Image (cartoon, rainbow, N blue to C red; front, side, top):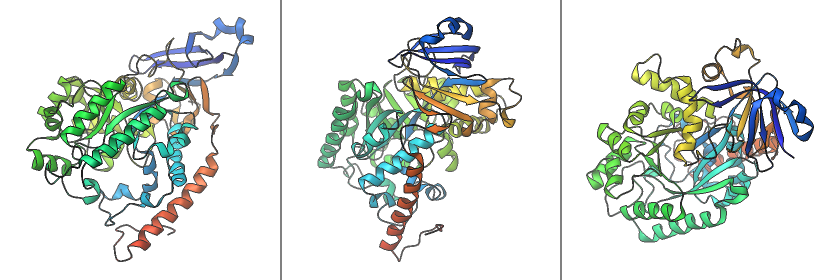
Length: 462
């Protein structure tokens, strides 16, 4: 039976500010938007549809989180205060103590936070993603999954030191990484009625050899998907690549034919003018991750990247999955960075979080806005709140004053995954309860394993 989202204020596209009052959206059995029009036009046919009244609700496109690491929920409240790369003294991470089932719970926890903040699509990048792909898929959200690949013989982030030389790479490690990535693609790409896609993800510019860069792009082109990398996310990365290759990070990628319109470059906090020009020349998509950048005292040069020819999406990256917070932080950070009181606009920023995300994931044909022929990935927001009244400009009001709890329903592919504030497909209370137990256990094990090392921050209740 077809679904009718009935009698709402519909924001079809943030950037174009397409706002229609007393509108309805007809969604077919495949989860595709079939009709949009005045609510009155559907009155005579209401008995034909499964109707969800949305009186006084604002219906918008769902957010596309262009860069995240869901299992990093384990570091919440800890790693945000420890700089980047994190300066914890331990030779291993708290995540390394997790079983596969515990990893699934921590990843699912991140998805639940994202759903509650209006996220319908996650670009999730991790290690051994196959171990938790099924668990997060059960939430009903949409995913682009990427197995992070590296062929460096040590972990530059955990080591806390820059890439040492161009001789620190291993062909065996590379082959293992390719195998994991290809297995993920073969197991999950186009699964769940195309709700799951797989991308190729060499991890960071300072942890991948030239051959891995080239092979990753070749795999993406062969499989007809996008590819992504962390770029210029730390001073350590910039220094390490300069030391090993005598190049800037973006120059290093360009030297080995890695830049292109199907690339999503995440972060780009420390790119200079010449690197910005290179990224624009190749129409690279940028995942601006402003909330985590702000926590680390940085901000990507978003305006300059757009002016150079790049497209912009929004990501959350580590620990937090609140896309509304990330979008608002991007709004504030760019105004502060440029000392500009009026740009970017709220429409610009929410556009980055929706249509921008669709553009850089090559998904504008079916995601990012609410138009006929596109997937019904949407959110319903209750504006009948003290902090949102009076409601004179919908988009500006939402980005400036909205909070995640204003979002009452989330739909993906024509099916609600949250409705009337209730998560529908997984037991949210159980996930939250188990995540607390898992976190206390894993951080306790880490501290007990290395009793002579200083934690640097105190943990409550452990």
